[in-house]
Image (cartoon, rainbow over all chains, first blue to last red; front, side):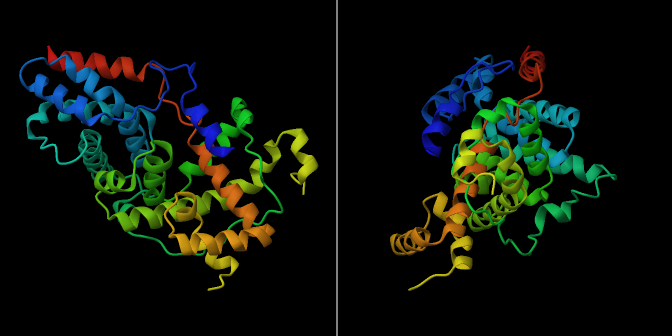
Amino acid sequence: MGQALYIFLVASPGHPTDFPQVKTAPNPEHESECIRRILQGEKHLFHDLIRPCERSIYFLLFSLLHNEAEAEDAAQETVIKAYRNLHSFRGDSQFRTWVLSIARNEGLGRIRKGESRKEDSLDALTEDQGGDYTPAFLTSWREVPIESLERKELGEILREAIEGLPAIYRNVLLLRDIEEMDVKETAAALGITEGSVKVRLHRARAMLQRDLAPRLKGFAPKRARLFGWGA
Amino acid sequence: MRIDCKHVWEYISAYIDGEVDAALRAEIDRHLETCEVCSAILDSTRNVVVLVADHRVFELPVEFSTRLHARLERELA
């Protein structure tokens, strides 16, 4: 059930932003052709090239910087740098991976310059943290309260939980589970090993499960209480 | 090989992503058939993954894309 629902949701139109909120998978063949033409002078094609990447760029930077305005400014800088350095893109990774590594460097550069961000210091971005990841115990949770996302309160709970994760886990979760990048691309974009991606993703999900599972039970459809939601 | 609950928790994320080998998956499946706690933990973890992936949770700022492409247009001009 979860998988079918998920497919429906990622293709769901009608969100109040500038462009359709459909997750767009990069197309390497289209990309390389686009890049060739841009470098030959069709500069306007860069708009099309960057469009599928802009969500990932923004949310990676938001995850690093924790500030909407600064993340947007950094995203614009990233895109401009990507355009100016397009000739140096070798094509040995996906274009999005390359752009996200520029975004990451842009974000880390801004963190280095800022003195007030103690919470997400560079150390916090590079050191794995140990700890106990015992999950939350439930008697049952078999329904996804997906329709509850229409309620702002649930969205806020989810955002708050994700933003509350340590940065190294939040960044991986964001690229893997929210932007749907694969392990290899996530590792390349963040400059870490594929093993670290897997470990951090596991910990991020475990932390979210422990935090969210007991709270989200309150959003269950009423009929589901018959099957143990209220326990 | 018999696995316990803690062993299952360690592999839940990999299990959801289909990254455990066939033998371990079979062991986990066998454990889940009889362990209500692990079964609920798996369901809740999977559901959390589904929920956070929804684009209604994280939306771009209004007009973000318009401003980005306007800035880019100035660069391209």
